[in-house]
Length: 307
Image (tube, rainbow, N blue to C red; front, side):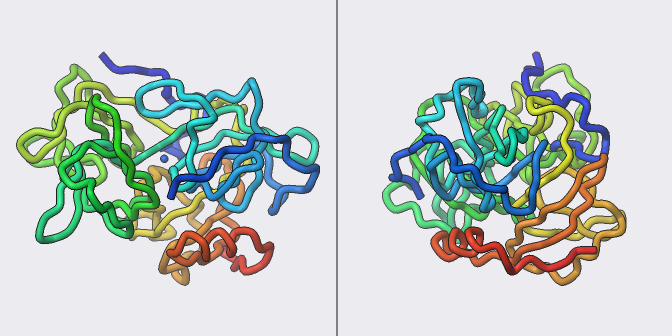
């Protein structure tokens, strides 16, 4: 039976929603400063880079008792969040500040880490960009961003026993099956597959080279912070058939056709309005190294026009 806790509410068809540890969290109130870009009523998709509230995509997002935090398996304490985790945040503006109403830990992969001649993989999905000494053959969670059919990892950590997970875009597969994040999968529940390109969190067991899906959540955003007005998204572009010819890999959304994106070839922070399509206004090219990326996000400049 499908779990509908994360079904998208009132966001429209344009956003089919579809998202290195060790630092102790500090959730003290953030200082009264204007968020960069002046964005509020915001959906934020990126990697956690620090605390003192939550630092994601260079934005400081406050938290409190009202903030709901969860992962693919249910509620989690805010104190469990770790630098390097991939987060989807639904934030509202409170005066000059952003405040998180909901935080989703959207690790793209949970399963056994395989090490082969072609490198690391989990549930048939290549994992690149992060070493995992001593973890091969163990069950892990992989945080990071999709790049095509692979995950660029920002954190790989041991995971507790439970279902295997792939969180990414669903698509058609061979023999009437489906793919999630480009990896072979099969639905074992009485559910018509969502439209291709929809962001899903698929849970089941990885057997015989495919994920046997026993539960499926659709969407990233639930409307916890009300209708979205802005998006802040870290990711990689990939070709798409519709104008402007690109999409953010693994996000499951549509760009405004007027966006000019051909100059953004690597990891990028995209920011802009949302009206059913992502009206991306600027792109900030980002380095791959975690420290250099955090420093770039902390600066106000460097953003390039995307319109």
